[in-house]
Image 1 (cartoon, rainbow, N blue to C red):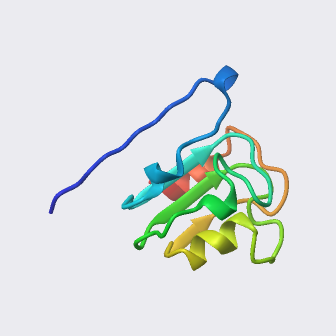
Image 2 (image 1 turned 180 degrees about the vertical axis):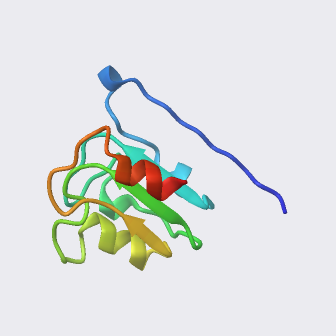
Length: 102
């Protein structure tokens, strides 16, 4: 089995915006920074087609609504098999997200 690892890290002062193309063909997508109902490093409308990806977003409110534009709903609709996010305020360090990844 071939594995491809893509890692992009940005310093907080640069902001937490990422290129949505980094999500393509990724099995595991993990984001930890500021978030909202429609944003977690990229806007929900920018989520590319995913192929059975596991998405973890340690960011506030990424699952706070059930609209078609909510970040967690859009991730599942684009092909994620799982999404772990927050329905309200999230904080770091949060052991739930760390434990979910192990």
